Amino acid sequence: MNAHEIDYTIYGEEMQYVAIELDPQEVVVAEAGSFMMMDHGIQMETIFGDGSAQQSSGIFGKLLSAGKRVLTGESLFMTAYLNQHPEKRKVCFASPYPGKIIPIDLKQYNGKFICQKDAFLCAAKGVAVGIEFSRKLGRGLFGGEGFIMQKLEGDGMAFVHA
Image (cartoon, rainbow, N blue to C red):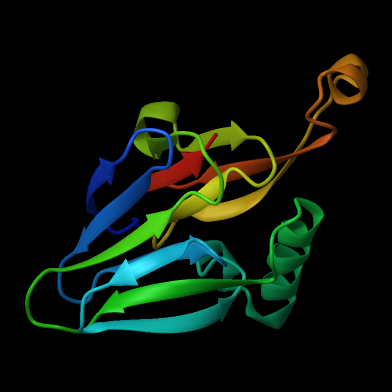
């Protein structure tokens, strides 16, 4: 399944937020606690895991995906924002601490991007949020990131904060 194609604008300097413009029936998923505001016509739905195509393998696949998210310090649940209005609508997400929001087009990274725990902010529906283990002992012990990192997979846009 291809991820939804979303349009976005990032605002701010030290405390940034991303405004995502959704076409009718387009969906964006976000981490719990990152929501800032939305236009009328957007429906919020809490989903178990990340809502990606990789979770379509029944309840076991959903539990496995959600368990991986818990290992990276994230919530079991994410929120999906669906534009049910016949025109374009905006939904905005803010970083929980000062820093930069970085847009990542996963197509440019061969469909896979590894980032630190808690870096994920939001993504187009279809992007999978999982875990990646560091295979190097020195990096895991002395690198400051630990052995568990977040892995974003798919072909859409994802946004991380750092």
